[in-house]
Image (cartoon, rainbow, N blue to C red; front, side, top):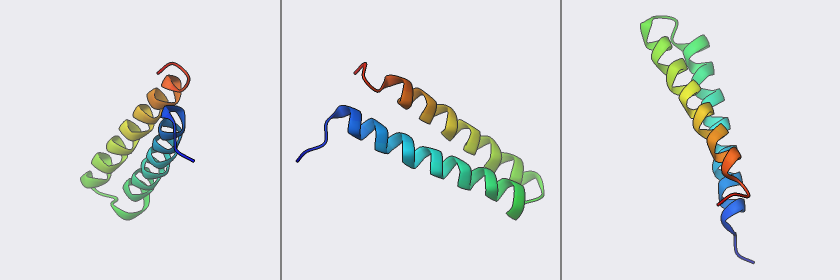
Length: 60
């Protein structure tokens, strides 16, 4: 049983949400200095891209 395009986008969305939450958590709890802002910003970017992937499901 192969994966179609929607399944691939669903997995990509799920993985990017997990990575975004991890990066935001690192920015908040692990790096309290200026580096934390960078981690949190990249995490928010991951969540934004995951949102786009989720919006593309069913349209590709």
